[in-house]
Amino acid sequence: QRQMCIRDSNMLFGDRAKLAMLLCGLAFSALLMAQQSSVFFGIMSWTYTPMVNIRAQVWVSDPMVEQVNDAKPLRDTDLGRVRSVDGVAWAAPLHTSFVQARMQDGNFKLITLVGIDADTFAGAPAVLTQGRIEDLRLPDTVIVDEWGAALMGRMGVGPDGKPKNTPLKVGDTFEVNDIQARIVGICKVKRAFTGGPFVYTTYDRAKGYTLGARRTLSFMLVEPQKGVTPAELCGRIERDTGLKAWTSDTVIWSWGERSLARNTFWWFWTNTGIPFSFGTAVLLGLFVGIAISGQTFYSFVLENLKYFAAIKAMGAGMGVIARMLFVQAFTAGLIGFGLGAGMAQAIGRVMIEKGMPPFVMYPQILWATFALVLGISFVSAVIGIIKVSRVDAASVFRG
Image (cartoon, rainbow, N blue to C red; front, side):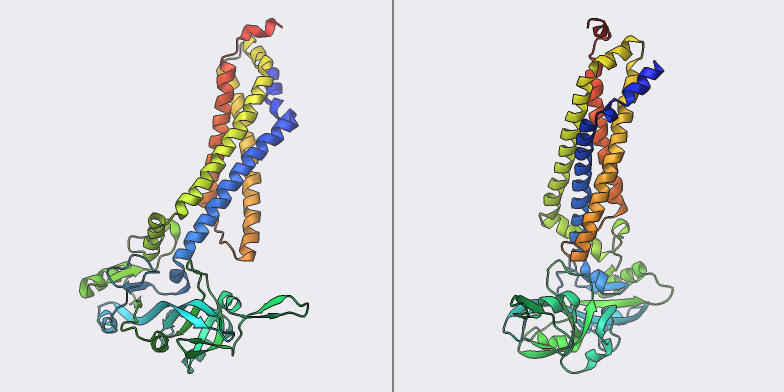
């Protein structure tokens, strides 16, 4: 009986055609679920890009702000009120807005204008590939991110006669509201969900670029004094000023109640169709996996019913047969998950190199995909077990 069980446990793996079909179904299911989930979280990470690019432990905003991309202007006098709160080491102004930039060739580009404090450079990009941050103190100067430099570049004709884009470089100029902006640096930052490139300048100069705006203070960046936690300082600011204070926590799996990134993520979750679109793709991968692997496993059981009947006739109970089928299904599930997750990671590397769309594969995505693939294997095994349980053991003696 033991020898028969061992030999029967290798039935599926002896049929290479069915094994290949089963592994393809499981691998495709794992690939679709892992890849689409990673792209979803990558796109959602763009929604709170300012929280990643701009370094500050505490953000202060208007009480009606729900997410970081929807800044409601504050009065400049609010900055003094925040600075007077006990526990504040320093507070700096921050301006963010969407404006049109006119390039030298006459084209217009939508940019995200970021105005930072000229004294402390709080909110400045962390990595500059060209230029110096101190050069922002020069007249009519800006810093553009790498992607923006390429997007806003000049179109021309290459040596081969084909259209060629020449990225902007240090020294190039463009106009914002008919005011010249001279590039003194190129920075590397994370791209935004809105798609517009980031253009950094000083807070006072940003006021000139946004002519006609009475209020230009979008957020305040605040640093707590030593011994004061960001969450504690947020409570003090809200109590003393009536404004809303947020922590800068952007770790997706450990958001706090005061995290502006958390609010931004859930705002896009509840107010856009992004979760539904990617959720549909993940469910499709799940159903495809169940359909293909279930059908293949059921076909395997049908072709080997006489062997299962023989095992039952020799005295083996359904518990032995069930364990045997579960081992086969879960082994195929492990192999299929490995193939699918590996292909998803390979595709992700290509996507990261290309820069579009974003790809973020958290460990939790792999664990969830692993659990779902094993769930598919479980369903496939159950389908086979149900069929075997209905087989009459005496049928093996009837020819």
